[in-house]
Image 1 (cartoon, rainbow, N blue to C red):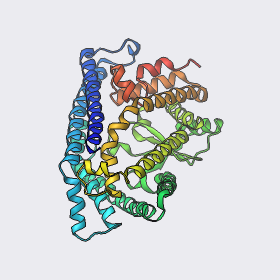
Image 2 (image 1 turned 120 degrees about the vertical axis):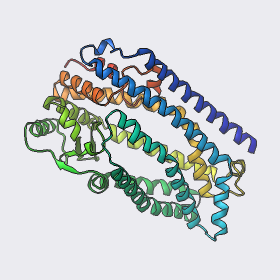
Image 3 (image 1 turned 45 degrees about the vertical axis):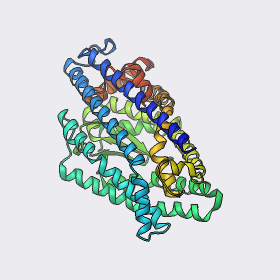
Image 4 (image 1 turned 90 degrees about the horizontal axis):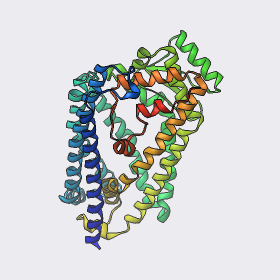
Length: 413
């Protein structure tokens, strides 16, 4: 049975890596072959210089992504087959740590190790890749402060959650995973409420959108659409990146956040069309549906862990002397991606369908299909979106339709 566990995992892991590699190289080759040409549907909308920079950015990010995935694959195999996990478990045991402290220490140590292993890639992405294309505006000191804040915040939230999770496992019997699911779900909903008011301001400054034509237009449009908000805010995203975007957060009266880069780049009509797109997501309950789907996946994952934690062949396959809750969570985290990867196209397809629906709602709400088109072109141009993604790659990975696909699908009225 131990050999079967290894064979099944390695088969799925190899299939994932081969699929990822094929898709990435197909996408890279597709982009390189297209050269600096502007797609016919974007002729006159995207200038040759933007097309050149988009192509170069797509090539650079694809190559970096291939290298990063190879690094992650090797790292995963090392973690699973080097004996590191059993050694860490034994080390903590020899130091006299007993549950729940051993449980928490084991998972925290793995989290720290994983974070350290990703530091070179984070540094490269920020200070080499993004810098090369003019996106990075983060200073080394700000980058370090962000990482320290994230570590402290993760510890302040994550460590108590781990102790609570172990408490359910130790005290709730065979139904521990149901209790854990209810608790974690409640915490996630609480975090959605806390994020805009408590967490996000730790990293960015949020100021009310100034009085003027833009604010008046957005407020009038939101009121006409019956969309009650907790305010319109501008985020100082430009102190870290030149990328632009907008989002809203919250369930019942969301807070609308516009990147300052977006406010600077968009006309009033274009910004209104972007906000109307976000309102479209809200009116169609896309955020709520995604939350419910995420909770369903989480429930299924906890159920699977509840089975695996009682299955000795899994632990024997990866060198553990005995089953343990922390071992089950670590193995599920390291091995799970090889199995869930093949659901990615379905998830991406659902997300793209929701984006199309939100675009249609934007046209109904803002009554400005031309402004939505020009806003999407600007976002694509300023963010250097790939103008020539391979169809299979975009179908598997893209949560949004390509720019050409979105423009073609926008109704006239």
